[in-house]
Image (cartoon, rainbow, N blue to C red; front, side, top):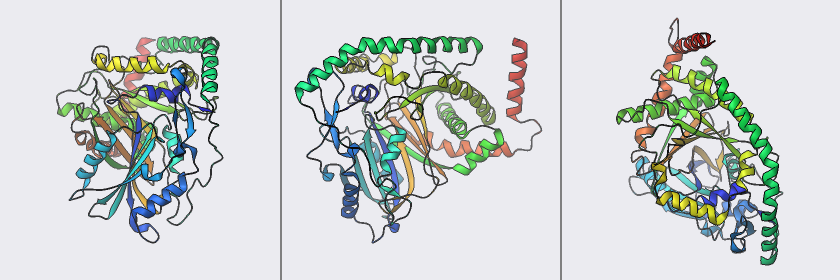
Length: 486
């Protein structure tokens, strides 16, 4: 029996008509590389051929009687690729604006829970018909960043006419139990919850104690509920708006090398600079730094078996209160080091362990009450937005024979945090995908366009022949501050 983990199921319970919990992807393709040429029928048939034996694509949800436990996955005996892979054409002139407008509409449509929780829309007519775009959706209950990349590898190859990277799977559909067995297992699971709670309390208390020690030492990661309020931190609607942009991975690496930071530090600094410019243009820039929630994969460290989502979260200040881009990067890099050390001191399975207590009925009612009462606008801001950095392939990839020119991931947005920025590397480029609640951020392009500008600023700054760089000045100030404190 294939039962959803508490964390996977939580994404089902969090979902409302406004707070949709699917993960999207915008894949721009060059159909000229497809052996024999492009046709929708051939692409649809090829996708069907590759996924029909993969459980993640052909399973659906089955509820436990009276919602006494998390749902289970069962094989969809009526699986039909035509219910999942659809065809659309862009209206003239078929440019970027038409594409993101259509993608925004598709992102705002919920997935049908009576079927396997994924869809793909093959969009023709992009850039005068020279490009084809695939807009994909998969529910967060089925994937996180790493597992999503693994699933897409069933459709991607290293050469146009080569077999997909993931050719076969050892996974099998779980046994489908009867209603009585489901009910009996649910009762036993609920009776075991106190034992589970007792087992995880001690590690949790230890983690809290370590956190308090780090707070006293000044080495703790940024705390939630300390973020300033912005125009995109309130109750969201079901409308979405999308923007995408590319930046050069080599330029990012050059900044990383020159400053002794990491690629992730530079990505967060770019996001911080872009958000600062966006808010400054609107006269909304807060005095304190914006706070981002950053999902972190714990797949390698986790001791738990099964489950699509193996993630934890750290909180990072983005330095939006710092004008100089290099100084922002250095401060962000230092706080990130503290955040990573702090995060590693917490059990990799802590979030998954506590998520087992998410009660289906109670959790869903609580989420709806939270939205209906607009509580996101009444309590302190937990975090301003979600930012993810997903490593991708360093070489060209081909989706059903078509070369991938752009691979833009798009995560969910939440009440209280109406913007999501996700970055994926791919063949020497960083693809930036931004999705927002339309009422929270009507003009996503006003944010997206600042990413290349911020990278240009950082590139120019690290090349400046200054005797004392802003980074050195920032380090000197912190050293002096620490000496004064001692």
